[in-house]
Length: 109
Image (cartoon, rainbow, N blue to C red; front, top):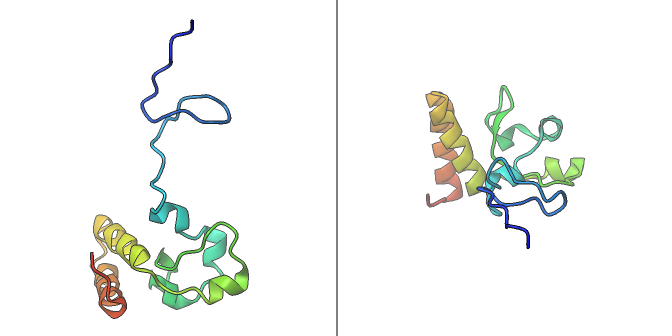
């Protein structure tokens, strides 16, 4: 009988190989954040730093069409992610804007 392999972060179902990094949580912002290509078609209201189109706060999903991205609305999860990232990168102006967005949306985090 074969010994069972121990993997720290689980096993890939398709290749049966050990995962090198932990999988992101199902509801995490990592899976909902827009790609660079999707960011180009998003309006300025979807960013905590609209001038540079950085720190997105609107979710995109995997198969978001261009019109869906234009109608996207900021979410509390996106605002929280933008705030945390701005604090990590020492961008106080962006962090303040994210806090203002939090108050407008009525987020509780």
